Image 1 (cartoon, rainbow, N blue to C red):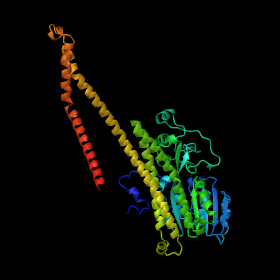
Image 2 (cartoon, rainbow, N blue to C red):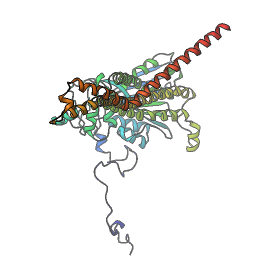
Image 3 (cartoon, rainbow, N blue to C red):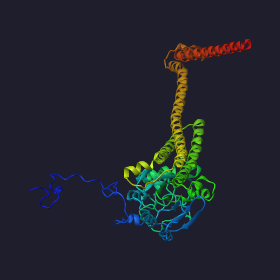
Image 4 (cartoon, rainbow, N blue to C red):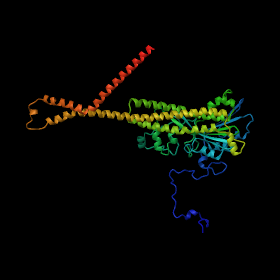
Length: 507
């Protein structure tokens, strides 16, 4: 009888039990179906609990006309039920805030792919910046980094269950953890109910985003961040953008939509800008990505200011404590570089995309198109990304060089100190020997009994001179040789310059 003939699973007939996976650091989605389809239940309570009051801006335009409408969560459904007018070439829906009801509504209306929806709702550390191409839309994930004041609201992981809110006093003294008490900002979107992902729709620092599961380490690194003296922090969030084949761009921000939206709206409201006259949905996508990349430049400038200050301290007064600050700086620069570097691959994927290749392989007439003009301006975005990466790499190398300089300088100072101590020891060595000799308690000692203290110096001074000459012969000899070498080089250089000047006068 086979193991499965009796209707029992074959695993019961194993000779020994296989070890099960550890429950520590468990991935909740392990073994589940890929993707997330709101039409196929059940939907996890983790996603349903994600709710906030979103600021939704809808802009419809062509070369001659533009209409802007603002909604909250309740008004968007009624707008989407209306048919799209014929004059509209591009529609941009910008959602500032992540809320499951809005995400579900837009997914059903535009038929977003289940894999794209899963990536949109996934946490930042489970996603890599990328560009996915589907039959009738494209999906782009990008990290957004921007510089904030240290007094930004919702800082220090307020409401995050994974982060310790009441840190014991001994940990505060040991790690120097700061827990600033700041008043909430009523203008910022706040989650209405406690949920699994309170880190969404709020300020998330660089260390809390990519620092790993160790909350004590995150607290220490944030308290001793390189930007702490400037009272600045780096906020990180995930931005998701959809580009459909019918000319609709849907963008999802957590809290930074107000940093990207106003400059784009100003360009759209002018009938002379390229973004308006082209009426190209792919140019709208390029404008959003360009705005995201431009927000990284103040971050780089802040770190350049910090490393310049550290460099002055290292050059003027190097000490071991500075190496700790430089290590934290290199750690943050590495995080920044690893966060921004994949954006170059995303921009390259958009630039090199060809609609015809996708259409032929899928045998569909539809497909997302990136215009030739957009490709030209994507090259400019790519240049900005590469410039940022070059600056980060330059700063990282400079920080590593400063760490080497600190230890080399300290080692050199210690060597010089040892030289001085050695010279002093050599100087007093013969005198110590003579003092010990003349201090012997002999009953009859003519050298002491028949002479004054001048006799000691008559013997001691010549002995010191002989000892110094013998022990320091190599050091003194090298210094003498170097002096004559430098003198010969100076004389040769002066003669060469005089010869060159005389030849110029003759010519």
